[in-house]
Length: 192
Length: 174
Image (tube, rainbow over all chains, first blue to last red; front, side, top):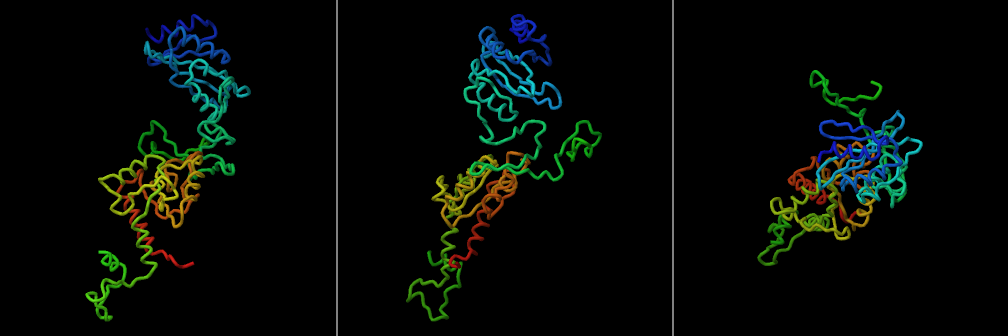
C-alpha cells in the first residue's frame, strides 16, 4: 500500500480539515487546518491506518509571518513501511497545541524538545519540562530572533551562559558562487 | 636501581667528595623538592573527564597500542578523590560546566588539568549558545592539546609536558 493511498484515506475521513495530499520526491504531505484536532487525526492514523510509529516531531519558526510556528509530524508504519508527513500551524499568541503522547508515547521527548527550543507548549503533556537546557533558562534558543552567539545568563549553582565570540561572524556560505572566493564562508550579516 | 634513577635528577655521586659507594652503600644527596616532584610526576592518576569524541582517543591512549602506563598514568580513577590530573576530553556545555568545576573541587591537592582537544581548550567549532568557550573559564588549565580530536600521541606528549612542568614546581615554598 502506498503512502499516497493512505493519505487519501486520511483525507476521506477528515475531509476539509486536511489539505489535498501533496507529493514531492515520493514524500507525501498533508496540512491540517486546525492544530486543535491533531491528536484526533493522529489517533485515526495510528488505529486505522497502522502508522504505529512517530519517527519525528519537529517545529519550524516562520519568523515574521503569521502563524509563526509550524509543527511537523513524521509518521511511519512498521507493518506497511509507508511514511506520511502531517503539518499544522500554531500562532505566536497561542503557542500551544494538544499533545500526541496519548497516541504515541514516543512523542514525549519530541514535544519536550520543541518546548525547550521553540517555546511551543503541549497541552496534556505528562511532564512538560525542558529537555536539553536546564530548568530556569529563560530563552528559547532555536527561535529565529535568538542570536547565534547566545545571550548572557546566570543561574547561581545551576549554570551560566555567555555570548560566544563570533569574530565578526556568523560565517555563511552562499551556493552558486562563480569561484571559490565567492563560495567560501564569509561574514554575512542579514543586512549585507 | 632506585639510586640510578635519582642520579638523573641530581649531581652524580662522586668519590671526589670522599664518598665510596662500595663502603657506604648507595646514598644519594638530593633536594626534597626534586624527590617529591619525581614521585608525583611518575604516577599521575587521571580523572577521565570524557565528554565527547576526544574520550575515544583517551581510551586509545590507555589501551595497549599507545599504553599510557609507560608514563605512570594508567590508573584512570572515576572518583575525583583519588585523582591527580583531570583530563577534560571533549565539549563542555554550559549545562555541564559547573559539574566539571565541582569534580575539580573534589580532587585533592596537588592537582592539574589537561584540556584535551579544541572543544575543551576554546569551545572548538561550537561557537554556540550552549557550549563553554574553553574550560579555562572554570578551572585552571596546565596543558592544552590541539586537535579535533588529538591523536593519542598528542595526549602522551601533553602528559610528558605536564611531567616536566611538575618537576620544576616548588613543593616546600609556602
